Length: 277
Image (cartoon, rainbow, N blue to C red; front, top):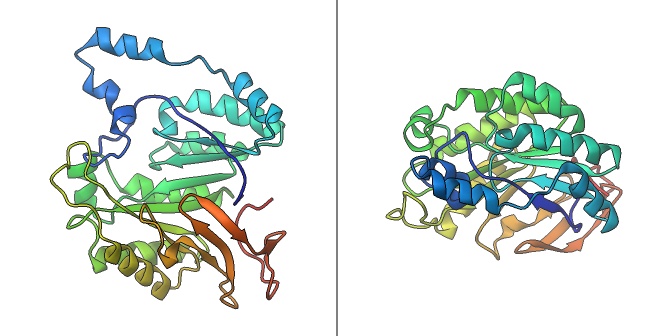
């Protein structure tokens, strides 16, 4: 839904412990404070009470057309997310997860009827990377990407490129081919890392790495590859896979030009996959 407002919310905690986490002060705080109960309880008490009904009521009142479950892993607050998504769906509001993809099969089956989109992190191709740096497993993530797709949820994939860890040509080609085998229309976001949490000594991702990853994805046959966290690159925009026309021009977080009509290219009429107004 480019060009529309979205209500974003999250809680605390995560089922991963990524050493490079860009939201660690939200996602890792419960783990960091596990032996400091007073601080942990104080943190919990500081959270605003925002029940599902209040979220949906706010969105309806302010004509907000979608809700993002983000900042930390939605699986951590699954019951809260499910109750909100169900009410939002009944009100005609779209629901979007931003997730690491590590959910149970049962959870996916339960949320899928109410979920319109899921931006899933595929953090690397290496199982060793997942084990050592994320303290997690990659295979369930790859399986769940397919599960969400098969359930009819619009999926997009994000890979945060960390210099020297997950940005080799070989790893990037593997990810691109994996997505291509599911669908060439799955958007792949390759984004820039900045030093954070436990990886403060790792340098930030240079623009040339994003450009290289962008070219690898396009060469593999993916129709929609995007660069992120470094503004001003060609990979910010959406182009028609058929005629090459500029469909959505972006500047940072904003869509400044949209050349689509009911999800079709204004130039050639080609239907663009996605969720549109």
